[in-house]
Length: 383
Image (cartoon, rainbow, N blue to C red):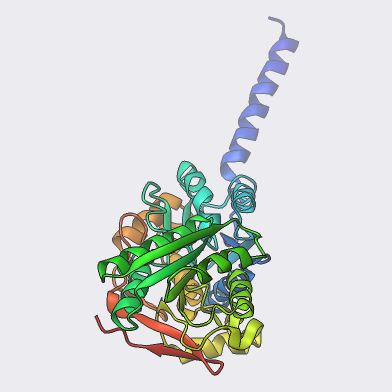
C-alpha cells in the first residue's frame, strides 16, 4: 500500500471517529412539552357531550400548565374529532398514534368511538381513558383501555327497579337504537325491571339516522303498556320520538330512558313534549366551584349530565400525576392507574379502577333525574 492510500484511509478513519464523537457528545434535543392525545365528538350528534368533555380537559390542562406543568414541562393537547363514530375514531386514533407518536389519550368520547379504538390502543400499548362510554364489558379484553363512566350495569338496572318499585310500571315498551351503547342500557333496564316483577311487552329497534318513528309508536298504541323506555345514542333522537309520541297521542304512559334520553337539551328542543315525570338514573355530583370555573371560562353551562362530562377534568389531573411518575410510557401509565390510583379524591368523584378499566362507583352515588319546569331535579333512590 503506497503512502497516498495510507493517508486517505487514515483520514477517513479519523473523520468517522470525529463524526461518531460529535453524535455522542451533542445532546439529543428534548421535547419541551408532554404530548397528550384527545379524542372527542367535536361535531355530530354527540357534540353536546363531546365538546363539553374536551372543554373540561382543556380547563384542567390550562390550570396544570399555569402551575408549572409536569416535571417542568407544559402539557400539549393534540385534539381530534371522533364524531362519536367508529370510522372517524379509528382515523383519529391512527393519526395520534402513528403520525403524532402519542402514547396516552384522553377519550374517545362515547361507546361507538371507543369500541374500535380499544384494540388499536392495546396493540400499540397506548393508554386510553375514555369519557362517556358505558356499554357493559366493553374493555374487558383490552388492558390499556380505561374509562371514567361506570358501565350501564348498575344505572340501567336501577331504572328498571325504580320503574316497578316506585312507580308500579308493569308492562313496558322499549324503543332502542341499534347501537352497542343503546343495546346495553336496554338490556340492563330489562334485567332490573324483570327482577322486580315487571315485563317487557314490546321491543322495537331502529337503525341510526331514523327520523320517522310513527310506525313504532302506532304499534305501541295498540299494545297494553303503561311505560316506555327510550334508549338512543343522542338526545336528538329522543326529542323526535317524544315529539311524535305527543302528536299521535301516546301520552298516558310513564316515560323513562338512558341518560341521553332525559336531558336538558331535549327539554330546550321540545318543551312539554318531554313529560315532567319522565326520568332516568345518573351518577350524581355537586361541585359549584368547578361548575363556576367552567362557566367563567366558556360562558355557558356544561352540556349533558355533569358527572359524565366533568369526570374528564379529574381524568386530566390523574393522568398528569401518572405522567409525572412514568413519563410518556403508556404501559407504565396503565400500571400506575391500576396500582396507585386508589380512592383518589378528585373534584367529581373518588376514583379507583378495576383491572378491566371500569371505575368503582357505589350504588348510593346514583340518583333519579327528571326535568321539572325547566329545572333539573334529583331524587334519592330508596333500595
